[in-house]
Amino acid sequence: MPENLALGISLTEGTGGIALLAAIFVSNFPEALVGAASMREQGRSKAQVIGLWTICAVLLTFAVLAGAAWLADTDPAVVSLPLAFAAGAVIASLADTLMPEAFEHGGPAVALSTAAGFVLSFILSLA
Image (cartoon, rainbow, N blue to C red):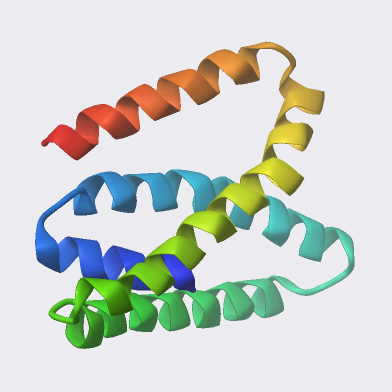
């Protein structure tokens, strides 16, 4: 949720919004696929899985709209708190779950892929 607020803010400011959108999509899409597969393995029906992820998508879209509508023209000191929280949440998720699991299953190629992702994010932030 915090990263979606940050996305809403950055899309209205025109500074790195597209790069942040790409980064959020690239990080969340595989995570959602793994979550959906895990839910199916636990015996949940397709309708339950799709319903839950649809609700999540609606709530996260609302967070993007809320960030764009209510926080875009706010004092930078006020906006810095949700942006810092979003950055911390993303780093914590990467360090705790995604990177160790990715390295376990993907091996050393994960390091190269991670570096390539950072380069791509940098290039997109220049656009």
